[in-house]
Image 1 (cartoon, helix red, strand yellow):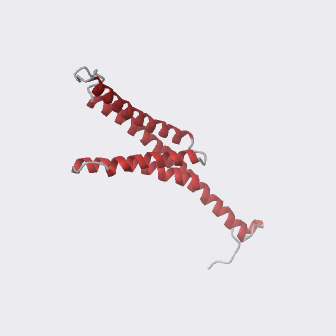
Image 2: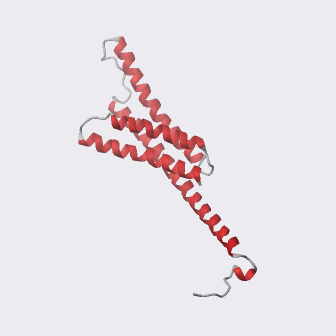
Image 3: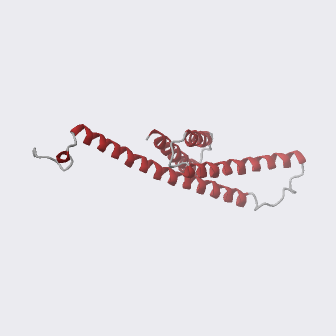
Length: 158
């Protein structure tokens, strides 16, 4: 084992000072990784929201009116469901934008929004149907909010 002075020790720096510098450097590296991954997660959340809105738009007939439904109460219920679906996906887009904007800061808001989106998607997963395709799709859709929440929490801790 070499006992000679290291480049930092030769300049009058103690072992404790060198260790503190290394710990600080490791924290900075971890924080940069948390910031980078939170930006990626925010972008994925925006992409998920936009793709969900496009899918809803295509599945419901590209914005055609609901004149085929005879009962006005049924039309109102249908309209409420559609507005709720669009609102939930606009919220996903908003969460992604907030995550990207606050990626450089320790923010409780990103953690809270990540937990909210993750719990909502988890509830959707737990109430999903029995089909294999639906279960696999819900697992994939659950991965993105989990990735966002995990990295928001990681960014807040570091």
